[in-house]
Image (cartoon, rainbow, N blue to C red; front, side, top):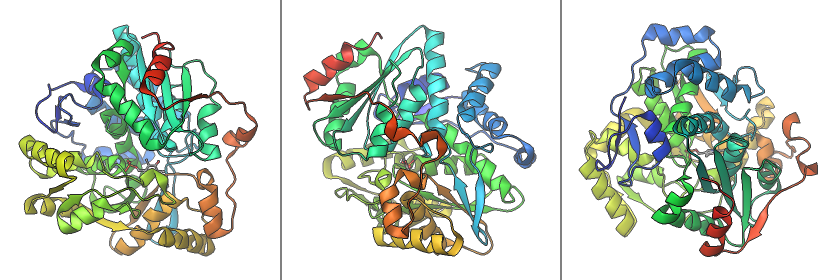
Length: 463
Ligand SMILES: *Cc1c(COP(=O)(O)O)cnc(C)c1O
């Protein structure tokens, strides 16, 4: 299996190289040249298999022999053993024909654990094979940082540094990062904003000499290894509600378009999906793009669902590439236009192609709160604000002919203030994290100065 860049000017790579590269060197995103196909019978057979077993069936064609079978199976087993729930991603019926897929049973209570737990093991394995070490540096406003730290803690070939804006992440979110005391984990509280954190990290990736000196590696949502791991639960949940014998629809709380793109991949692999519904909060660039044909950035508005507060939706580039018959010249010109003027237009044919597979809807903060409240009153089920965006949009898009599965991307206890304000119920932390407020923290407060940050990182890595 070869991977090609959406921008057409980077070398074709195999699975391991594509994972280690993250972003392609031409600025594009890697995609498999062709989609592996699963037979109807194989999909039906998933009904009686464990999550890890199905994960191997779906992931192995993408790895295509670059990791030995027993090693890959073992890594998948271990990744999903970190989920205390026996079915890893359980599904519950919220109301007739509407199901919730709970993706928040991992160690940091958000869906990013599903991919990160596996990706960390794969990256560490590749480094061992190559006799290398690597340094991961990331900026976080909350969820991604803790999922990465939990996944990469104590991996032998990796040092991980996560920058968060000092005083601007919630108590629980900070503690999920700073109470991890493993030696290879380094938390930096930056005297600055989240944008300052992101800029520092971006500049490190552009500083070729620095990047090389510490073997800098990224694990953000454009990494192909993360998308692959997310394809799995589309299959397991669809089969649980009747696939492949009847088509199902999904609604996905969307930010960077990684999670829902994995749903598109599942469909290309043969899963009978009716519609993939993109659910956004009031940062609704995707809704505007698909209804007007113009992808136009505007500022980020803070909402109750912060993990979906985005200005651009990076993985959307992958869908554009697919919808435009893999014309990389077209993608390059769109992305140039985005960089220069903050906008590009989507041609009629691509739009038509996209609307065959996708629908889109948004939820304001008010609608999100109302959904948390009404859902709790009607069924006793407590949604977090991200999942509530999904449920609000799903209810508008429901069609009696197709079961709807809405992805629940975070545990309500991760966003207690918004949940309590909406429902008057205080969501308590699950046992794994119930003592988090008593644990000791490890974190360095540093100035917003590239020199200081880079020196701090360089002196603590051995890559
Ligand atoms: C990251 C995240 C999302 C958005 O996922 P994308 O893959 O970026 O679209 C939604 N909800 C939660 C809780 C998240 O952490």
